[in-house]
Length: 542
Image 1 (cartoon, rainbow, N blue to C red):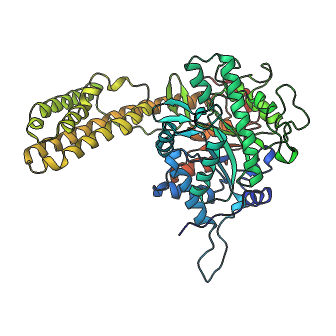
Image 2: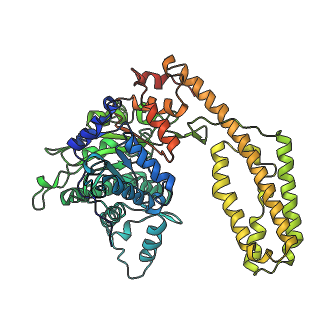
Image 3: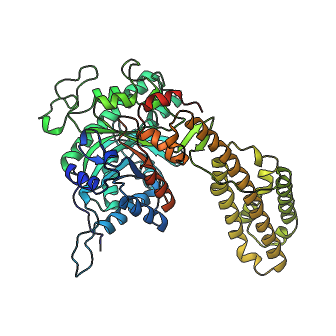
């Protein structure tokens, strides 16, 4: 039996009703550009969220109950499971209560703004589309869906072709059990121009094609507005804030000038969009209404880079002037000093001297060599499994002499959870059935696993302490420009405060994947916005 479709869409009246239920936050709610929808100052970002994780369900539910009414997602987040998370939570919060109360749910659909995105071809999408694209019977004629695929890398393609967007909107609506998506964004369309330049296509030609593809996508999205499957649309791009001469910059002013007319203004085969430089009568009357881009304490281009209209305005200034809603992503995950920096406070934990950790890693390497040269040779494995185990049981070898030279805690954490732990687990899975019958081999692997756990804990604590030192330095830099009343805020609260105080920023998207994150972010909204914050951004030195 199919899930209940959640009918309706966000409205000005509904979002205002939601806003008024949170008087402590009411003055911080913003109109989302020209949509006339009221949005919370922070939105719930679902990147790395999954409907199969109970903690994520609880966190999204709590965030809504505490006053966050904007939820941002994408078709490719967790291979569609982030969208399924939203559907599950909304179903629970909007469903009527069991009889005999017959009371409506906690919230109404018209109070919540759902933002989703399309463009990435990964995971299930990649498996499905790559088979079709490589079929000899597939239409690859100019302008067809499959002729415009951006084959960026193995396992990562991209497309904003109308046929692809139609399919993606259908799938997103089904995953979220929605009748309407409020905001639909083209997700990082700059993949095309980055790929084109890499393939040697002349810059002018690449840019012209890039902007034409965006315009074609917008024209199609106007039909989706007319059909009622979306309300408004826009672009999420990592390159909005780049310098004006950057090859892959998404030029907001050009997109604005070429945005299509609403279909209600189009008759017959009339002009679908004004030409760049000649906006015409319908300029700005379509449903292009939202932009999304990264900005944080290190990446400030959206505010400080004058890259619009011949270097006279920033993206934020241009969006503010045209009444475009501006959503900020990655407010706490910054790329600075050639590494990923998490703008948050870290605990300080004890760890042994560096020399002692190095000795543990070296001992780990010796254990690996001893196992491979001894017990492993006597284990009955097929050749492929045997080679895999030899390659995977090499943590000590990978880290020996290198473990203390990673750029940051974030890089260590990614290495630990995306490389080291999965590979070790895979190797142990390959050996599991074989070693159970041999107590000596089992004991050897158990001792090895214990050694890994101890070494990984010490390295983690080493990098946590370094991250804490870095965070204290950022606190100090912020406190030099902020008033003393803000000094007790957490680093993440200060970082968000600096963003939400900018005039023209509609909502800041934060990955609040746990109760603790939700509390930190929402309680931080009690701090009053900073007057004259743009000057502080210019003065801040990190």
